[in-house]
Length: 193
Image (cartoon, rainbow, N blue to C red; front, top):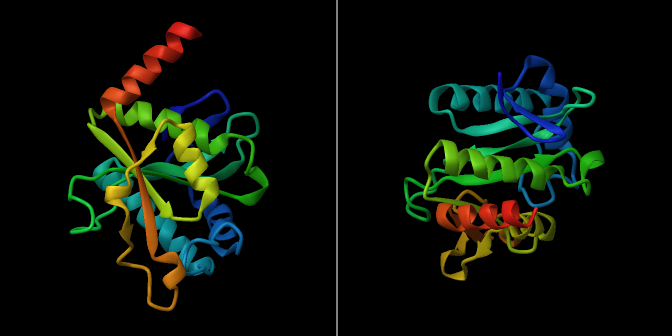
C-alpha cells in the first residue's frame, strides 16, 4: 500500500522482502552511530513486523521509502507517536527517518520528510510535529532545519530509554514545527515558484 509519493520516492507500507534493507540499516555502525544497539537479522525482522502492526493499528509509524525509478527500498521515514511520557506529552507526533548509507547526501530524507509534514498537517490535521535526535547528530539536525523545523531548547531532554552504558547518547535536542508555520512556508514557496 502506497501512503504517498514525492518526485523521486514512494512512501509505502513494508513488504516481507524489505527485511534485507531493514537488517542492513540496523546493523550498520555508521547509520546507527547515535543509537545504543545494533540489531541482528531476527531483531530487524521483528522491528519490521512491529512497524507494520503499528501502521495497521494507528495509521502512524515508520514507512518504507522506495525509489520510483528502480523500485529499490532505501530506508524509512514516518510520523510516529513516540510514547515518551512524561518527557513528551501523550499526543506528541514525531517525524523521523533512517536511510541506508549509499543513499545519504542525495536529499531523500528531506524530500520524504516534507511530504510527511504535508500528510500530517493537511490530511491528518495535526497542530504540531516534532523531531528529536542526539545533540550532536548533525546530519539529522540539518534535515530538521531544511524542512522548516526550529530548535526549542526548553524542550530538550534526556532520553529515558537510553541505557546507562551510553551516557553520550542520552541528551536529545527537540525541533518542532506548527501546522500554521508549515502552511505559511508552503504558501510562500508556492507564490515564489
